[in-house]
Amino acid sequence: MKGKLKIILPVLLLLAAGGGGAYFFVLAPKPAKAAPPRVEGTLFPLAPEFVVNLNGEHYGKVSIALLLSAGAPAAPADGTAATLPEDAAVRAIVTNDLTGLPSSDLIDRPKRNAIEKKILTDLQKKTDVKVTEVLFTDVVVQ
Image (cartoon, rainbow, N blue to C red; front, side, top):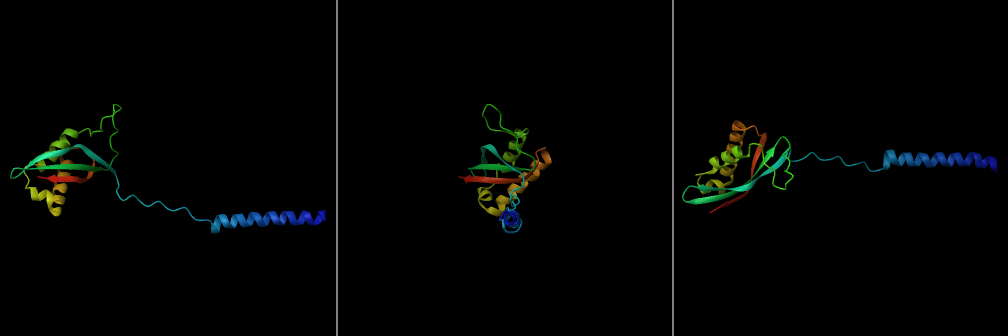
């Protein structure tokens, strides 16, 4: 009996190890591959929103986020919102590009997209901020 046990026990251990290995390598679910990010870069909202005079005694209030190719600046330790090193220049460019526009330009989607592209071009030409896209996140016209 001890002789049979010496043969059967190792065989059972080999079968158990082989079954576990087969499950691990063949049958176990494979980890899901992470999907590439849909937005490449860092979204950075400009605060506060922009309130500008439009053509014809109208005004617009626009919230804007910039898609930065580099990381966004860290928020200060005092709890205030983070700002770009060239925040004043960025805000001046956005304000200049929006002021005096017809209110319909902010309401009409193709015209609004053209304004976003104009702001992007001006930011890339006139600042060192690594912006890849300008996004109007909220638009109010009165």
